[in-house]
Image (cartoon, rainbow, N blue to C red; front, side, top):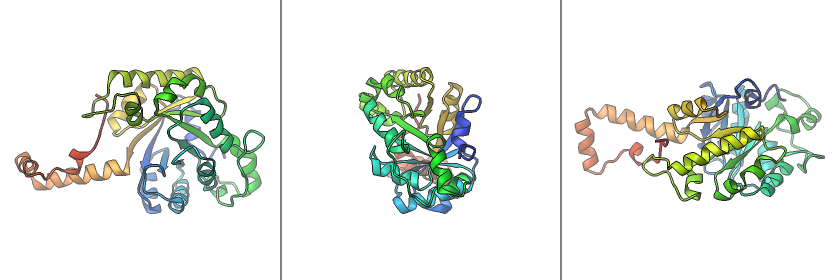
Length: 284
């Protein structure tokens, strides 16, 4: 299992650097299209994305079939959500809105089979996502072969950061900069990140390193992703379908319309492009 988990292998090799993408729209063909772009992992987003349980199963299978790690972001730290995601064959889960070390311990218990945790056993679906053939192999290898990733994106999680990082079974501290900024009173406005948010991101990375965890962060462009890679982050998202699609399509339409003068006239008329409405990229 560990050999098939591309993200886990990357995190445990050399600098640990890996690049991923974010899928919010349903569809196995979309999953395969993203996976064939060369990413190490793809988050199947069931928190904010338009992806239900059935679409999650299809996306996980499609991504794993391309040799890429499917990582499911569940909607909340709920036992049944952890079970459904891992039973689909996900190589790991990413869990939003964590607050305390007890939350982290609850998550680990949900994600691990006994005796480490309390995960129920019985899904017939995950084996082929790891190149193994029996449920017994999956049972014996899953505790070591899957990733448990927590998002640090609340003031409470920041206050309890060291305790969360010490919890055995947590593999990655993954920063959600938008929610974290909102939670500490410094939202990302006009694409600009407040110094206090920048300091919090630096602190999270250092605490992860001190506790032998990997650090990750959500980015909205390749340039941002490169800058965090240069700083030593390991699990870095590069782009998402609902960022790249509207930006590329709006940009292409602007080019088709012609000059900056034409675009300015459209803006004056209120025909603001989708790209202009979006939050991000951030980082300045």
